[in-house]
Length: 221
Image 1 (cartoon, rainbow, N blue to C red):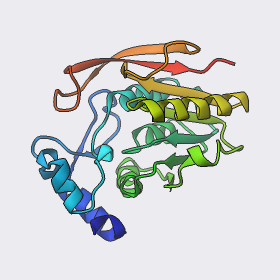
Image 2: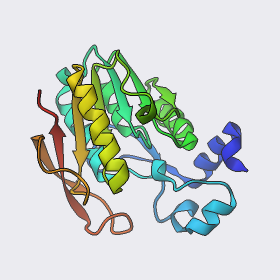
Image 3: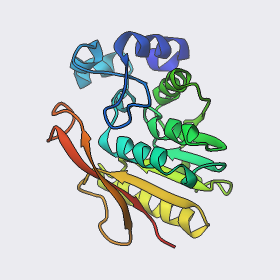
């Protein structure tokens, strides 16, 4: 199975994506799928047959793009600090944090493909990020984390509830918490402070609109 072999994962990503500049963060370059790459048209069944989880890492989701944009425009939030990019996917947010001057960044995602995607994308942007496939929700927020960034994490109800509780724990321990969200159904609308709102270009293959209104939020003290 392709999922068990890091070299095979790397080759698969290179064969099924191409380098692109996400529309809302043109300073960055990522290996992404689009209508001219094979993975774009693969069904869930076909992906399962080759041992591939849903390839969230192959797309620049609106929440991640908005959060990356905010970090790039407000580098003081992460400059010189130790950062976690939670549910990192392609690594767009963690890479933005490194470009904005973060001391170091740990990208965390339970999908091992994300580690290979991150490695390729970090190389493309001239930065180095760390990766873990450990489910941080099971062990609690690391005490060393000064900033936790989370893009597009509320697309499933049980996961959204667990993540928001985990982030609240991190905020209570002193970490700055920023969340990028394009109005997902299970994103909480209370107890948060909106920092910015963007119109993020996307595609109807991924979203219900070609431009998605997306906000960046923080958990206040």
